[in-house]
Image (cartoon, rainbow, N blue to C red; front, side, top):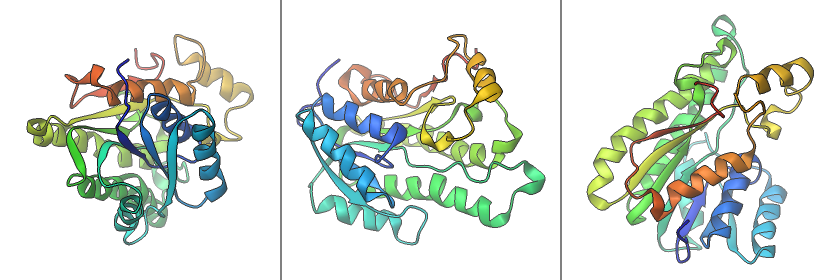
Length: 249
């Protein structure tokens, strides 16, 4: 894969899980990585330390997504460390209450959209003047927006579906600048977001959904993001790339 040396990347929600794996992978390819976190400073510092221990370069920045002024706070923190951007990875998100339609609360629904939809929209909007021509925008979505319905995840899936529209629209808008825009859509990934859920019969059933017979790992997603961040993917844009291990096959 082509190197990312000389590139600067920002990964939201990079203190743990998929975001951490993505940050570490991009740094391994040579990118300088901004490690965003919302509240867990210690975990973000661990991500930075892991990158630096492997010979990479990274810095942490804090912004609580879903709060008023979140995008402005994030970019102010970024601007204190860097003067331009090459790769934006919109990864941060929450699952919410995992309730079926009749049990969804307005408060929970609005919180999901504030974090999963509104925040990445305005983060991306404010990234555009900072993003160099030939840059990359990659959003971590979900397979649930394309043919796999789970009633208890209706709010989560709806909040991510809006980002599919953002990807296809921005791909057309930013094409003249050589900027590609893509969505990576994981299936069930074994992270602490699912802590307590991926055990026993539930683990067996979820693993059986993939022809590969296992859950995804953060590294499975991170390697895919790294491809889309590289020049190897220069002619891939507006794409929804399924990373569910064939669950939707």
